[in-house]
Image (cartoon, rainbow, N blue to C red; front, top):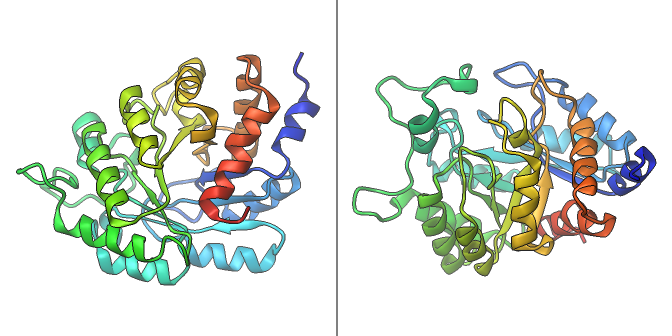
Length: 297
């Protein structure tokens, strides 16, 4: 029978590469400082701060100075506040130390089609008469801005350890992006919460993605009411099909209605243990695979 001590032990030295914290344009459970304090006290080794509106590289830099024994990674999400598919913003973020560049999230055309402009992203800026940001044009090709962004990420895949995150793109957009990224020389690709219903990347495409070197992320937020209730059992089935060596677990927590990210991570681990995953398998997905993306292992 699983014990809390077992869960706590599995958590030691882990990384949650998908967390939200205040400051943000909507309320958050914790601010970034208190988040890192709690994560560090629980034994995590690091986290990645994600903000739908702003780069988090400045926060990451300061927090790394305060807590030199804990890794805080910064990121940039290509939504409207950062100029959308904006190569200049990407270049600046990479120079400032960003570890992950995300394709659009709340501003993605896929998000708008499926959930509308407001949904749970109501506080975020959305220009009038816009249908969201698509990365593929009417001819079925990636738009030039995406190719320029991939070039920038590829140039820094080794030296700055930059990860390409697929954001809230549709499953139809993800594979052309992954293929072009691989061909361009991007070495680190993470399929953002693939089991999240908004994304719904089929298993066949997940298998295709890992064939191009991508990792598949499963986020606990997807199992919540706000995340549209993808059962953890479904996530587990997908992980088993793809293989733990190709998967990464995160919480995507920080919402005021949910537990803290640390509490969420513990719950996620407990659920997977009850579904037959071993401690070693879980640590592959929360320690070994994140380290491969961060190049800190």
